[in-house]
Image (cartoon, rainbow, N blue to C red; front, side, top):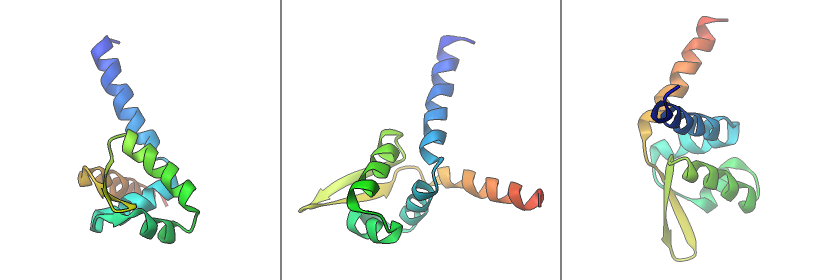
Length: 98
């Protein structure tokens, strides 16, 4: 495999790996609707702030979300909403195979 191609596939795999967790999928789908405070995401997920922050860091490092600070809180937004089309595609695949 050519180095450039391998590098591209590695980046794509990193995004898929970041999405490959139920909590992170929940967070991504929630952010589809609106920019959200980490405190609201904590309540949505039902885990402690530290755990939610770790999930958000994985998503941020993959380039899926971005954050802005307002006072003591961070607000997160989805950077590429079309990435969730992938999850809809998987859901359709599951229904077809039932």
